[in-house]
Length: 415
Image (cartoon, rainbow, N blue to C red; front, side, top):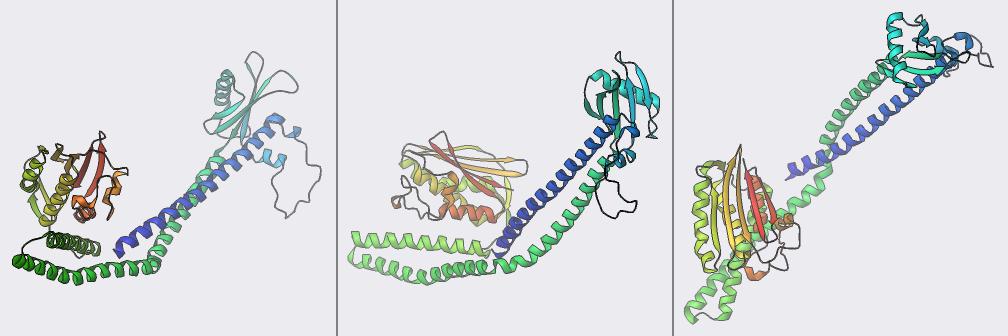
């Protein structure tokens, strides 16, 4: 139990840390993309406004000394000089009248003109073509169309650089936090684990202490009935003693399952034969109430590796639960199928009215629905809890479902 609690603590803590790291690194990368893209758009606007002519850019009003040590953003002239771009101008009829590729070494005039014509025909004012961002404007001096293409290789490299760097740092931090959480988890859950262990130990000790008085009460009651005959008081004492003994037996079994000390010798068993044999014990009691027992689709030769005694107990619990809460003249259906690597056993029963609670609530210990699950049925309220513990211990799962507003089904999935 302590190991399970520790794993859940580590999983929960690492899930929270993972979400925090993803949000943090995502925010950093998104902020980097937005800022770099804004700078690129500003540079493109500067070049487009100047039509690729450095002389059209006005120097800043306050000239700075050549060895100014202050760290400030580049001005418009520095941005212009540090950018790789090319310009193509077209007249009103779409004919190229000017091409300048002097600011880039990767594009010749023919390629630049071909790219410009495709952009001109698209009738767009701005966009992206490969690694180039472009902006379309009209010349201030005449009616020519000016298309500026800015190389954004540095922008893309900045995205990748920050992504890889932040991702690498995030992975290293995640691994370090995993080791820290695993190291501190034992100390964090120690008070809870000790409290749980004390509660389980109390149940175990109390159960063993109560078993002896119950056995004495039952023996004395049977002796009294032997000498004086059975009466309603002795009958009630015997019934409630048997009921309390069964309750303590189930509580002790649950305590052992929680502690992991229950016997778990697994062998290969024919689940088909085991199921068919054990449901026969319920045929007559169901028949007396007019309940039909349907053995639908019990696939033969279904072999599983599990604890045989626990499987018998699982079948008995589910069949007892079905027989107790099935309405008179109702139906109980049992099926067994093997699909891929899993075995599915389903026990379904009809009822007068479904419980007003989610199906998974039925597995809670001592849960009873006010409409159906009263003490008159003879149940303890922990049978389905025992069933879930058995299935979990045998590496399986069990779910409850409501069907067609009149049926409850329990599906066991085993490997």
